[in-house]
Each structure stands twice: as structure tokens, then as C-alpha cells.
Image (cartoon, rainbow, N blue to C red; front, top):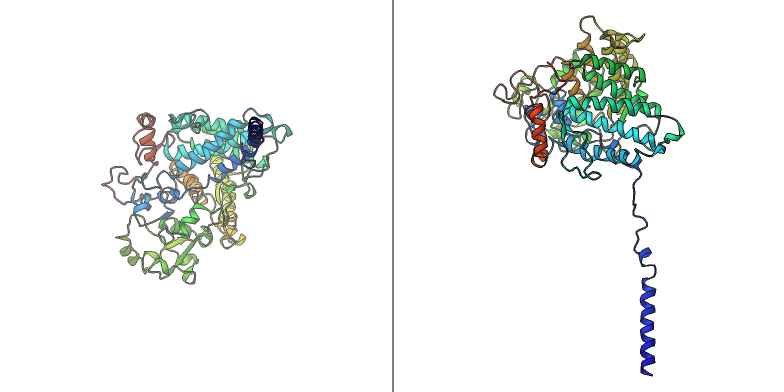
Length: 517
């Protein structure tokens, strides 16, 4: 009897174990945890992260004398002709682009390369990746290119660097091939999820060819023959000439603009419009000045910078001169008849620099002005004259201002009056075109910096701070490139040093391949 009870009990326990184990795998499977990500979502992550970092304000916009701060510390950079690769801002674009643009686009390219039904997505990712690489090499020179972004897929944790003269032909090839391959054919896939153009192939093509135009113009001094051929190919493909096709990142109160965050946060009272920029607009009665600037008249501190004392009247605007720090700017402000340095003109953070303002990547204003130069050089055949492209570029930028904020809109009458009063003049074509490009690229720091080095215009006076004792930025010169972040120097040391041995010293004063005197 005891044995019978024992067998019954054992059988019951076995049945219990079996029934508990039944469905165990299904029970422990997370049905809401994704096992894969649509490559379209990865592309959108890459596009979102193209928004320029605050580093572009501290360096690029300061170098080209549009925005400056008299304060040091984490804001030290172009204002002091000072390298600051270690303060959290010097390498921000490097980190942002490699970690969140190059990596994501690399993954999209790997996932879609051999999928015919996603050909358009594959080529969109190639264009975005080439855009990011172009910014990186234009900022730094030699950078990781072919092996970049492949840490996970190919276990390339220490990517080799490539020289800019080797990267540019590859960028031109990417823009050319990827843009040409975009198609409305159903077999290539209808990609309507991207946040740049919602899958509109015609606009993606214009974006790609506009980047090809930009790349071609970069070579104007170093390889005019290649530059002309590239520009001709871009023009034949069709570029952005109307604001409706502008490539820009949209922001809102949830997904905020990085520069707007900075200028509406802790640095609200620390950045000012530079005298050279304000004077250029003011002396030419440029209606964009009232759309861009505000001056808090009589302000003696940041707390005094209130809307009630803010003036957008062009006549009231006074730009901050370069070459001063927070120990010397006070006396200069007094000499300029101001209450303090807080009384200088600022970029209006409640309009153009609000947290929901867009960041423009490529615009009709920029491409029209590049076409004006290309036409002047005789590189393109078009019934449109250089003077017409020039005027169209100015109009496009003035019309673009309303996209930032309704309060920054330029009236059509003021726009047309300015265009009529500022025609393209014989003998001054390159100066006028590229000075307008400088204005049209305001808040696009990397592009303003790149075109300033390429063209040599506008004719700015070098920032005198720390010169001639500064060993890196000698007297009468400008910063020519940005240095590598410390993370690269300490982790990818061998490859960085190999690149420097060919490119030249890792200094602010080292010229890039296409940056010829």
C-alpha cells in the first residue's frame, strides 16, 4: 500500500513538472521587444543628428566673425584663437556625426544594399552619409572614411584615416552614383517615412546634386578641371533653386534645436553678433539685419536683457568687436557708448534662435550663389546670367527668413529694393557672390567656415586676440581647421599619427588639401 501511494505521489510530481515546463519558452518571450529595426527608422535617426552642435557656434561662427563671446572657459575657441578639444565642445561634431550619423547610415547601407525593393532607401543613406563625411573632412582634414561606422558589422574598432585628397573623389562618386540611382520606379521601393523629404524622389535628387555642386566648388583652387566637370554634372542633374526644395531639419518644443537650446539657456547672455557681420548688413541697408538682430538697450547684466528694452531697429544695432575678453570688453563697450557689453547686439533668441527654429543644410540661396560663381567662371552653360543667379540667391535667402519665425520675415518690397540697389558689379563678382554666401549661410557654421576658406571672402580682418604670441594662429592669420578630439588621440593613436604625418601638424593653423592661399 505504501508503494502504491509512493508511485502515485511521484507520478503527480512528474506531471506537475511537465505541465509547468509546457509553454515556458513562450511565456518568457517578450512579444513587444523588437528583434530588428526598420532601416528607415535608422535613416531618420541619422538625419535628425545632422543638426549642428553648439561647437559650431564656439568655433565655426566665431572664425567667420558672425557670433562671438568675450568669455572663456567652456566657451573658449574662436574668440581667443584657442584650441579647446578637451572642454566638451571641441570634438562635439566629430562625436555626434560618427556615433549618430555615420554609424546609422552604415547600418542602413549594409541592411539594404542587396535588397532591390529598398534601393531608394539605400541611396538616400549614401547621400546622407556623404554629407556627414564632407562636413567632417572639411572641419578636420584627414578622417576615418572607408572603415568608419563598421565597428559592429566588421569589428573595425580602430578605423584607419584617409587623406582629404583621397576622400573627395569618393564623395563625388557617392553623390553622383547615389543621386542618379534614385528612381520613382516601384521596384526601387516607395520610402515615404524619411523626415527630410517624405520620400519625394525629385527633391532627394535635387539635394544630392546640390551637394555634388558644393563638392565641385570646393575644388575651385586645387583642381579647377575636376571642379568644372563636377559642377557641370551637378547642374545637368538639377539642383535646389527654390526654397520649397530646401533641405532642413525641423524642430519643435519636444525635439529642440541644439543652438537654440544653448542660446536660450545658460549661455543666453554670453554670445553677441560680431561687428563685421552687423556692419556689413547695416552699411548696405540690408533688411535681414532687423530679422536677425536684437539689442537690449542699456542692459548692464543678463537679467536686463528683457523684451521691453529690446530693439530690432537696424539703426540701433552695434556689433561686438573681435579680440576682447571679459576683462577688456567692458572698456571697449564704454568707448562704443554702451552701458556694458550686455548692451551689444545679439542674435534674437526669441525668433531665429528659438528652440523650435529649423537648421538648414542646403538651400536655394546657397546653390543659386554657387551657380552665379560657376557661371562667372564659365563652367556652366545657361541662359541665366551670373547676375541673375546672384540676385536670385539674395531673394531666396530673404524669403527663407520667414521659415525661422514669422517675426523674422523680410517684406517683399524691402527685398526687391535691396536687390535692385545691389547688382553684381564687374570686377567684384567673386567678392560679392561669396560675401552673400557668408550671409546666406548664417547659422550654418560648417558651410560658412568652409566657403570662407575656399573663396577668401568676405575680406575679414583676422581676430587679433593673443597674436602675435600665439604659436598656433600666427599674427594676421585665421584658424584653418579644427583639431582632433582627445578621445581619438588617446584611443586611435596609431592611425591618427599616421594621418598627421601626411596631412601636417594637428594644429588650428594647418591648411586642408583644398584650402589654397
